[in-house]
Length: 237
Length: 166
Image (cartoon, rainbow over all chains, first blue to last red; front, side, top):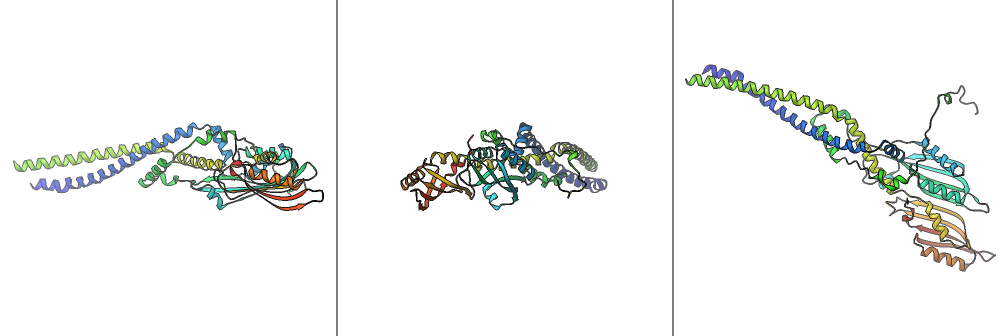
Protein backbone atom coordinates (compact mmCIF):
# COMPACT_ATOMS: atom_id res chain seq x y z
CA UNK A 1 0.00 0.00 0.00
CA UNK A 2 2.89 2.27 0.84
CA UNK A 3 4.56 1.54 -2.52
CA UNK A 4 1.29 2.34 -4.30
CA UNK A 5 0.99 5.59 -2.38
CA UNK A 6 4.56 6.50 -3.25
CA UNK A 7 3.97 5.82 -6.95
CA UNK A 8 0.81 7.92 -6.95
CA UNK A 9 2.37 10.79 -5.04
CA UNK A 10 5.79 10.72 -6.74
CA UNK A 11 5.01 9.81 -10.36
CA UNK A 12 1.32 9.76 -11.29
CA UNK A 13 0.34 13.10 -9.73
CA UNK A 14 3.15 15.20 -11.33
CA UNK A 15 2.65 13.35 -14.61
CA UNK A 16 -1.09 14.11 -14.53
CA UNK A 17 -0.43 17.77 -13.79
CA UNK A 18 1.92 17.91 -16.80
CA UNK A 19 -0.71 16.31 -19.03
CA UNK A 20 -3.21 18.96 -17.95
CA UNK A 21 -0.78 21.70 -19.07
CA UNK A 22 -0.11 19.84 -22.35
CA UNK A 23 -3.85 19.38 -22.90
CA UNK A 24 -4.40 23.11 -22.54
CA UNK A 25 -1.52 23.81 -24.95
CA UNK A 26 -2.97 21.34 -27.46
CA UNK A 27 -6.41 22.97 -27.26
CA UNK A 28 -4.86 26.38 -27.77
CA UNK A 29 -2.94 25.09 -30.80
CA UNK A 30 -6.07 23.49 -32.18
CA UNK A 31 -7.91 26.82 -31.93
CA UNK A 32 -5.00 28.63 -33.59
CA UNK A 33 -4.87 25.94 -36.27
CA UNK A 34 -8.61 26.26 -36.95
CA UNK A 35 -8.28 30.06 -37.21
CA UNK A 36 -5.25 29.87 -39.45
CA UNK A 37 -6.97 27.28 -41.66
CA UNK A 38 -9.84 29.76 -41.98
CA UNK A 39 -7.35 32.53 -42.77
CA UNK A 40 -5.77 30.32 -45.39
CA UNK A 41 -9.15 29.62 -47.01
CA UNK A 42 -10.12 33.30 -46.98
CA UNK A 43 -6.69 34.28 -48.28
CA UNK A 44 -7.03 31.77 -51.15
CA UNK A 45 -10.50 33.12 -51.92
CA UNK A 46 -9.24 36.74 -52.07
CA UNK A 47 -6.17 35.60 -53.99
CA UNK A 48 -8.30 34.09 -56.73
CA UNK A 49 -10.27 37.38 -57.09
CA UNK A 50 -7.07 39.46 -57.03
CA UNK A 51 -5.42 37.17 -59.59
CA UNK A 52 -8.47 37.39 -61.82
CA UNK A 53 -7.65 41.11 -62.32
CA UNK A 54 -5.36 41.38 -65.32
CA UNK A 55 -2.02 43.16 -65.07
CA UNK A 56 -3.21 45.70 -67.65
CA UNK A 57 -6.32 46.48 -65.55
CA UNK A 58 -4.14 46.94 -62.46
CA UNK A 59 -1.82 49.25 -64.40
CA UNK A 60 -4.79 51.20 -65.78
CA UNK A 61 -6.19 51.58 -62.29
CA UNK A 62 -2.80 52.85 -61.04
CA UNK A 63 -2.95 55.56 -63.70
CA UNK A 64 -6.54 56.38 -62.70
CA UNK A 65 -5.77 56.78 -59.01
CA UNK A 66 -2.07 56.71 -58.17
CA UNK A 67 -1.11 55.65 -54.65
CA UNK A 68 1.47 58.44 -54.51
CA UNK A 69 1.92 62.00 -55.68
CA UNK A 70 3.04 62.22 -59.29
CA UNK A 71 3.44 65.92 -60.03
CA UNK A 72 6.07 65.44 -62.74
CA UNK A 73 3.99 62.95 -64.71
CA UNK A 74 0.91 65.13 -64.22
CA UNK A 75 2.59 68.27 -65.63
CA UNK A 76 3.97 66.35 -68.61
CA UNK A 77 0.55 64.80 -69.27
CA UNK A 78 -1.23 68.16 -69.15
CA UNK A 79 1.37 69.94 -71.26
CA UNK A 80 1.20 67.16 -73.86
CA UNK A 81 -2.60 67.20 -73.91
CA UNK A 82 -2.84 71.00 -74.13
CA UNK A 83 -0.28 71.25 -76.93
CA UNK A 84 -1.79 68.33 -78.84
CA UNK A 85 -5.03 70.31 -79.12
CA UNK A 86 -3.13 73.20 -80.74
CA UNK A 87 -3.13 75.51 -77.71
CA UNK A 88 -0.36 77.84 -76.72
CA UNK A 89 0.41 77.09 -73.07
CA UNK A 90 1.19 80.36 -71.25
CA UNK A 91 1.65 79.02 -67.73
CA UNK A 92 0.84 76.09 -65.53
CA UNK A 93 1.00 75.64 -61.78
CA UNK A 94 0.44 72.71 -59.49
CA UNK A 95 -0.21 72.85 -55.79
CA UNK A 96 -0.73 69.81 -53.65
CA UNK A 97 -2.45 70.10 -50.34
CA UNK A 98 -4.56 68.20 -47.89
CA UNK A 99 -8.10 69.47 -48.22
CA UNK A 100 -10.55 68.69 -45.41
CA UNK A 101 -13.41 68.76 -47.90
CA UNK A 102 -11.90 65.69 -49.56
CA UNK A 103 -13.00 63.64 -46.61
CA UNK A 104 -16.54 64.91 -47.24
CA UNK A 105 -16.55 63.81 -50.84
CA UNK A 106 -15.17 60.47 -49.72
CA UNK A 107 -17.32 60.15 -46.61
CA UNK A 108 -17.38 56.60 -45.32
CA UNK A 109 -14.29 55.67 -47.31
CA UNK A 110 -11.58 53.45 -45.90
CA UNK A 111 -8.78 55.02 -43.90
CA UNK A 112 -5.79 56.39 -45.70
CA UNK A 113 -4.10 59.52 -46.91
CA UNK A 114 -6.21 61.59 -49.29
CA UNK A 115 -4.66 64.37 -51.28
CA UNK A 116 -5.93 66.79 -53.85
CA UNK A 117 -3.60 68.39 -56.28
CA UNK A 118 -4.81 71.72 -57.59
CA UNK A 119 -3.78 72.46 -61.15
CA UNK A 120 -4.25 75.75 -62.92
CA UNK A 121 -3.11 76.84 -66.33
CA UNK A 122 -3.57 79.61 -68.84
CA UNK A 123 -3.82 78.79 -72.51
CA UNK A 124 -4.72 80.71 -75.62
CA UNK A 125 -6.57 79.36 -78.61
CA UNK A 126 -9.91 79.34 -80.37
CA UNK A 127 -13.28 78.68 -78.77
CA UNK A 128 -13.59 75.42 -80.72
CA UNK A 129 -10.22 74.28 -79.34
CA UNK A 130 -11.40 75.03 -75.78
CA UNK A 131 -14.35 72.66 -76.17
CA UNK A 132 -12.08 69.90 -77.49
CA UNK A 133 -9.60 70.41 -74.64
CA UNK A 134 -12.32 70.29 -71.98
CA UNK A 135 -13.79 67.19 -73.60
CA UNK A 136 -10.36 65.52 -73.50
CA UNK A 137 -9.80 66.53 -69.87
CA UNK A 138 -13.19 65.05 -69.01
CA UNK A 139 -12.21 61.80 -70.68
CA UNK A 140 -8.77 61.58 -69.07
CA UNK A 141 -8.05 58.35 -67.20
CA UNK A 142 -6.09 60.43 -64.69
CA UNK A 143 -9.21 62.14 -63.42
CA UNK A 144 -9.12 65.94 -63.79
CA UNK A 145 -12.20 67.62 -62.35
CA UNK A 146 -12.30 71.07 -63.94
CA UNK A 147 -13.76 73.43 -61.33
CA UNK A 148 -13.15 76.83 -62.92
CA UNK A 149 -13.08 78.12 -66.48
CA UNK A 150 -12.92 81.82 -67.29
CA UNK A 151 -12.15 83.91 -70.34
CA UNK A 152 -12.94 87.16 -72.10
CA UNK A 153 -13.95 87.27 -75.73
CA UNK A 154 -12.74 89.97 -78.10
CA UNK A 155 -12.63 90.90 -81.76
CA UNK A 156 -10.19 88.11 -82.58
CA UNK A 157 -11.03 84.42 -82.60
CA UNK A 158 -8.23 83.65 -80.15
CA UNK A 159 -9.07 83.98 -76.46
CA UNK A 160 -7.04 83.47 -73.33
CA UNK A 161 -8.52 80.85 -70.97
CA UNK A 162 -7.84 80.36 -67.28
CA UNK A 163 -8.64 76.81 -66.23
CA UNK A 164 -8.45 75.32 -62.75
CA UNK A 165 -8.97 71.72 -61.81
CA UNK A 166 -8.38 69.09 -59.21
CA UNK A 167 -6.72 65.69 -59.41
CA UNK A 168 -6.61 63.09 -56.66
CA UNK A 169 -4.37 60.46 -55.21
CA UNK A 170 -4.80 58.10 -52.34
CA UNK A 171 -2.43 56.12 -50.16
CA UNK A 172 -4.28 53.42 -48.22
CA UNK A 173 -3.55 52.92 -44.57
CA UNK A 174 -2.22 49.43 -43.83
CA UNK A 175 -4.85 47.57 -41.85
CA UNK A 176 -2.51 44.70 -41.07
CA UNK A 177 0.68 45.05 -39.11
CA UNK A 178 2.81 42.52 -40.92
CA UNK A 179 5.57 42.56 -38.28
CA UNK A 180 3.15 41.58 -35.56
CA UNK A 181 1.79 38.68 -37.53
CA UNK A 182 5.17 36.95 -37.84
CA UNK A 183 4.78 35.14 -34.51
CA UNK A 184 1.14 34.29 -35.10
CA UNK A 185 0.11 34.93 -31.54
CA UNK A 186 -3.59 34.37 -31.03
CA UNK A 187 -4.51 38.09 -30.86
CA UNK A 188 -2.78 38.88 -34.15
CA UNK A 189 -4.33 35.85 -35.79
CA UNK A 190 -7.78 36.99 -34.74
CA UNK A 191 -7.08 40.53 -36.02
CA UNK A 192 -6.01 39.12 -39.35
CA UNK A 193 -9.08 36.90 -39.48
CA UNK A 194 -11.40 39.84 -38.79
CA UNK A 195 -9.63 41.93 -41.45
CA UNK A 196 -9.89 39.17 -44.02
CA UNK A 197 -13.55 38.51 -43.27
CA UNK A 198 -14.40 42.19 -43.79
CA UNK A 199 -12.19 42.51 -46.87
CA UNK A 200 -14.30 42.87 -49.98
CA UNK A 201 -12.36 43.14 -53.20
CA UNK A 202 -14.81 44.68 -55.66
CA UNK A 203 -13.88 44.65 -59.31
CA UNK A 204 -17.01 46.31 -60.71
CA UNK A 205 -15.18 49.59 -61.28
CA UNK A 206 -12.74 47.90 -63.66
CA UNK A 207 -15.68 46.70 -65.78
CA UNK A 208 -17.56 50.02 -65.59
CA UNK A 209 -18.18 51.32 -69.14
CA UNK A 210 -17.37 54.86 -67.98
CA UNK A 211 -14.06 53.74 -66.47
CA UNK A 212 -13.22 51.85 -69.64
CA UNK A 213 -14.12 54.82 -71.83
CA UNK A 214 -11.50 57.00 -70.11
CA UNK A 215 -8.40 57.67 -72.17
CA UNK A 216 -4.87 57.24 -70.90
CA UNK A 217 -2.80 60.32 -71.71
CA UNK A 218 0.01 59.24 -69.40
CA UNK A 219 3.49 59.72 -70.75
CA UNK A 220 6.31 57.75 -69.18
CA UNK A 221 9.22 59.91 -68.05
CA UNK A 222 12.58 58.34 -68.86
CA UNK A 223 15.89 59.92 -67.88
CA UNK A 224 18.84 58.56 -69.84
CA UNK A 225 22.34 58.47 -68.34
CA UNK A 226 23.74 61.00 -70.81
CA UNK A 227 21.16 63.60 -69.64
CA UNK A 228 22.49 63.60 -66.10
CA UNK A 229 25.51 65.59 -64.87
CA UNK A 230 26.55 69.21 -65.43
CA UNK A 231 29.96 70.70 -64.54
CA UNK A 232 28.41 74.10 -63.77
CA UNK A 233 24.75 73.86 -62.87
CA UNK A 234 24.52 77.70 -62.81
CA UNK A 235 25.77 78.30 -66.35
CA UNK A 236 22.95 79.63 -68.58
CA UNK A 237 21.41 77.04 -70.90
CA UNK B 1 -4.80 -9.53 -2.74
CA UNK B 2 -6.18 -6.07 -2.13
CA UNK B 3 -2.68 -4.66 -1.81
CA UNK B 4 -1.66 -6.30 -5.06
CA UNK B 5 -4.75 -4.94 -6.82
CA UNK B 6 -4.10 -1.39 -5.58
CA UNK B 7 -0.46 -1.62 -6.69
CA UNK B 8 -1.54 -2.95 -10.10
CA UNK B 9 -4.09 -0.16 -10.56
CA UNK B 10 -1.45 2.39 -9.52
CA UNK B 11 1.06 1.02 -12.02
CA UNK B 12 -1.62 1.04 -14.74
CA UNK B 13 -2.53 4.63 -13.83
CA UNK B 14 1.15 5.60 -14.09
CA UNK B 15 1.44 3.92 -17.48
CA UNK B 16 -1.83 5.53 -18.60
CA UNK B 17 -0.71 9.03 -17.58
CA UNK B 18 2.73 8.47 -19.16
CA UNK B 19 1.13 7.19 -22.39
CA UNK B 20 -1.40 10.07 -22.53
CA UNK B 21 1.42 12.58 -21.97
CA UNK B 22 3.42 11.08 -24.85
CA UNK B 23 0.29 11.17 -27.01
CA UNK B 24 -0.29 14.86 -26.21
CA UNK B 25 3.37 15.71 -26.90
CA UNK B 26 3.13 14.00 -30.29
CA UNK B 27 -0.12 15.80 -31.10
CA UNK B 28 1.39 19.17 -30.10
CA UNK B 29 4.47 18.46 -32.24
CA UNK B 30 2.29 17.56 -35.25
CA UNK B 31 0.04 20.62 -34.77
CA UNK B 32 3.05 22.93 -34.43
CA UNK B 33 4.52 21.52 -37.65
CA UNK B 34 1.19 21.97 -39.49
CA UNK B 35 0.93 25.56 -38.20
CA UNK B 36 4.45 26.32 -39.40
CA UNK B 37 3.62 24.87 -42.82
CA UNK B 38 0.44 26.96 -43.19
CA UNK B 39 2.12 30.08 -41.81
CA UNK B 40 4.67 30.01 -44.62
CA UNK B 41 1.80 29.95 -47.15
CA UNK B 42 -0.20 32.85 -45.64
CA UNK B 43 2.17 35.65 -46.82
CA UNK B 44 0.83 38.59 -44.73
CA UNK B 45 2.48 41.06 -47.13
CA UNK B 46 0.32 39.75 -49.91
CA UNK B 47 -2.82 40.15 -47.79
CA UNK B 48 -1.78 43.78 -47.11
CA UNK B 49 -1.42 44.37 -50.86
CA UNK B 50 -4.89 42.97 -51.53
CA UNK B 51 -6.44 44.97 -48.66
CA UNK B 52 -4.80 48.18 -49.94
CA UNK B 53 -5.96 47.51 -53.48
CA UNK B 54 -9.52 46.93 -52.21
CA UNK B 55 -9.42 50.29 -50.38
CA UNK B 56 -8.11 52.08 -53.47
CA UNK B 57 -10.84 50.56 -55.64
CA UNK B 58 -13.46 51.78 -53.15
CA UNK B 59 -12.04 55.32 -53.18
CA UNK B 60 -11.75 55.14 -56.98
CA UNK B 61 -15.45 54.30 -57.27
CA UNK B 62 -16.32 57.41 -55.29
CA UNK B 63 -14.00 59.61 -57.33
CA UNK B 64 -15.55 58.35 -60.57
CA UNK B 65 -19.04 58.89 -59.15
CA UNK B 66 -18.17 62.52 -58.38
CA UNK B 67 -16.27 63.14 -61.62
CA UNK B 68 -17.44 66.21 -63.53
CA UNK B 69 -17.08 67.12 -67.19
CA UNK B 70 -17.70 70.75 -68.12
CA UNK B 71 -17.48 70.56 -71.92
CA UNK B 72 -21.20 69.83 -72.36
CA UNK B 73 -22.06 73.24 -70.88
CA UNK B 74 -20.83 75.02 -73.98
CA UNK B 75 -22.98 72.99 -76.36
CA UNK B 76 -26.05 73.73 -74.21
CA UNK B 77 -25.16 77.44 -74.10
CA UNK B 78 -24.76 77.52 -77.87
CA UNK B 79 -28.19 75.93 -78.28
CA UNK B 80 -29.75 78.41 -75.85
CA UNK B 81 -28.26 81.69 -77.05
CA UNK B 82 -30.14 83.96 -79.41
CA UNK B 83 -28.32 84.80 -82.62
CA UNK B 84 -28.59 88.50 -81.73
CA UNK B 85 -26.94 88.08 -78.32
CA UNK B 86 -23.18 88.07 -77.70
CA UNK B 87 -21.27 87.36 -74.49
CA UNK B 88 -18.05 89.17 -73.78
CA UNK B 89 -16.85 87.08 -70.87
CA UNK B 90 -17.49 83.77 -69.19
CA UNK B 91 -16.70 82.46 -65.74
CA UNK B 92 -17.72 79.00 -64.60
CA UNK B 93 -17.10 77.70 -61.09
CA UNK B 94 -17.98 74.69 -59.00
CA UNK B 95 -18.37 75.51 -55.35
CA UNK B 96 -18.76 72.90 -52.66
CA UNK B 97 -18.63 69.21 -53.21
CA UNK B 98 -20.83 67.30 -55.57
CA UNK B 99 -22.10 63.93 -54.41
CA UNK B 100 -22.83 61.95 -57.51
CA UNK B 101 -23.98 65.14 -59.21
CA UNK B 102 -26.65 65.83 -56.61
CA UNK B 103 -25.03 68.63 -54.65
CA UNK B 104 -22.67 71.54 -54.95
CA UNK B 105 -23.22 74.87 -56.58
CA UNK B 106 -22.28 75.30 -60.22
CA UNK B 107 -22.42 78.86 -61.46
CA UNK B 108 -21.80 80.68 -64.68
CA UNK B 109 -21.28 84.44 -64.71
CA UNK B 110 -21.38 86.22 -68.03
CA UNK B 111 -21.68 89.73 -69.42
CA UNK B 112 -23.24 90.24 -72.78
CA UNK B 113 -25.00 92.49 -75.17
CA UNK B 114 -28.41 92.01 -76.78
CA UNK B 115 -29.59 93.80 -79.91
CA UNK B 116 -32.51 95.37 -78.06
CA UNK B 117 -34.59 95.13 -74.90
CA UNK B 118 -36.90 92.81 -76.78
CA UNK B 119 -33.92 90.58 -77.62
CA UNK B 120 -32.83 90.64 -73.98
CA UNK B 121 -36.33 89.68 -72.85
CA UNK B 122 -36.31 86.74 -75.25
CA UNK B 123 -32.92 85.62 -73.96
CA UNK B 124 -34.23 85.87 -70.39
CA UNK B 125 -37.18 83.74 -71.36
CA UNK B 126 -34.97 81.07 -72.90
CA UNK B 127 -32.55 80.87 -69.95
CA UNK B 128 -35.43 80.67 -67.48
CA UNK B 129 -37.02 77.78 -69.34
CA UNK B 130 -34.19 75.46 -70.35
CA UNK B 131 -33.77 72.42 -68.14
CA UNK B 132 -29.99 72.64 -67.62
CA UNK B 133 -30.34 76.06 -65.96
CA UNK B 134 -31.88 75.88 -62.49
CA UNK B 135 -31.89 79.62 -61.97
CA UNK B 136 -31.05 82.66 -64.10
CA UNK B 137 -30.55 86.14 -62.67
CA UNK B 138 -30.11 89.05 -65.04
CA UNK B 139 -28.77 92.41 -63.88
CA UNK B 140 -26.78 95.56 -64.80
CA UNK B 141 -28.86 96.56 -67.79
CA UNK B 142 -27.37 99.41 -69.75
CA UNK B 143 -28.84 100.88 -72.91
CA UNK B 144 -26.27 101.56 -75.63
CA UNK B 145 -26.37 104.37 -78.18
CA UNK B 146 -27.03 101.89 -81.02
CA UNK B 147 -30.11 100.51 -79.25
CA UNK B 148 -28.33 97.48 -77.90
CA UNK B 149 -28.43 96.54 -74.20
CA UNK B 150 -25.56 95.46 -72.02
CA UNK B 151 -26.38 93.00 -69.26
CA UNK B 152 -24.90 90.56 -66.77
CA UNK B 153 -26.31 87.16 -65.99
CA UNK B 154 -25.68 84.57 -63.34
CA UNK B 155 -26.76 81.02 -64.11
CA UNK B 156 -27.10 78.16 -61.65
CA UNK B 157 -26.34 74.98 -63.59
CA UNK B 158 -27.99 71.63 -62.93
CA UNK B 159 -25.19 69.36 -61.60
CA UNK B 160 -26.51 66.48 -63.70
CA UNK B 161 -25.26 68.32 -66.78
CA UNK B 162 -21.73 67.80 -65.49
CA UNK B 163 -22.07 64.04 -65.20
CA UNK B 164 -19.78 62.31 -67.67
CA UNK B 165 -21.35 60.44 -70.55
CA UNK B 166 -19.71 57.59 -72.41
